[in-house]
Image 1 (cartoon, rainbow, N blue to C red):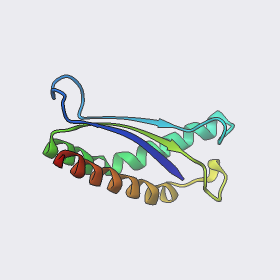
Image 2 (tube, one colour; image 1 turned 60 degrees about the vertical axis):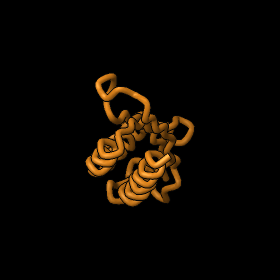
Image 3 (tube, helix red, strand yellow; image 1 turned 135 degrees about the vertical axis):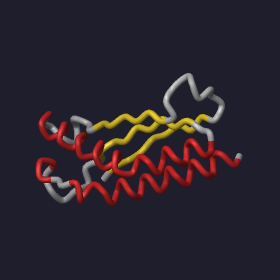
Length: 109
């Protein structure tokens, strides 16, 4: 249901920018109405906010910066207007675990 693009950067000064920058996108091609796109973006932001502390801790520990773009891909069986937070959370948990693993692997190189 969601897809992620990210960049790990470990060569930046910590004072130059935030440890993590996140963007959310719901393509118009997938969800036609702006009301529905905005609702999905709110759900994605909230589900990410719940799991963000784990990532921030990893970033500080490994001294890296992370830029993330999270895109809604629309493989839900329900209409976007009826999508619930509980439907988005499992995908976000999987995504945060993937990012956490990549942060660990990226800092070891």
